[in-house]
Amino acid sequence: MATHPEKKSRRWLLLLLIVPFIFTLWPPFYNYRTPEIAGFPFFYWFQLLWIIITAIITAVVYFAGA
Image (tube, rainbow, N blue to C red):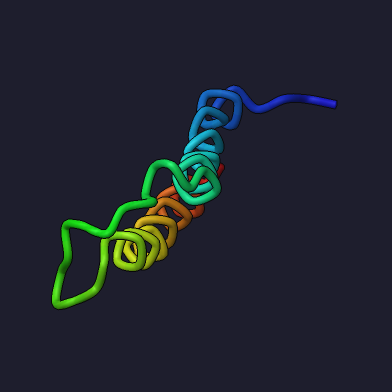
């Protein structure tokens, strides 16, 4: 089986997919009430923000061809 050197160099992009898991699966990162945005405690808006960040990271990895 031949390996493509360009795919090997992009493999590090797949590590970006781990970042959302680290930040959303470890509650001590976001288990706070303040600061609030539009009345939403930090606990809620931080998780919603990571939905957007995860979509962006997934798009970057997808379009980079990893």
